Image 1: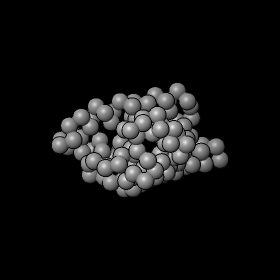
Image 2 (image 1 turned 90 degrees about the vertical axis):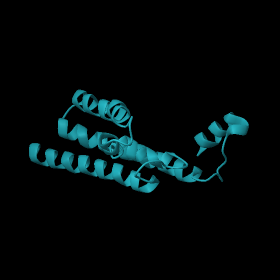
Image 3 (image 1 turned 30 degrees about the horizontal axis):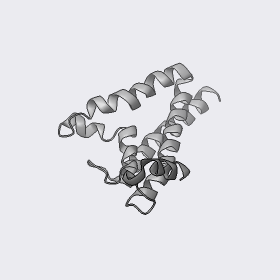
Length: 130
């Protein structure tokens, strides 16, 4: 909340207030989106048992794959890219979400990715370290 107020204050006349459409949703959604990405990372780390493998998998997935595949939203690959965890969850941050997913359904897709990663991590830990 403070980050929004400070950032928007720095923008002056071009900034938005808390009353702007989607502003409060974006503030709350930002925290939820980051928490879900943290859960996704923790679940992946539990499965892979290491930092290097986790970073080697998640950095390309989150930083490179989605922008490259999502370049043409009309193609089949572009439509698939909308369901990757980073792009789906980022819909909550936009005042007017674009694409097949809305704000909350996009966050739900990210929650599914995170839930699958946490469940796989739990299963791997129970099986491996029992």
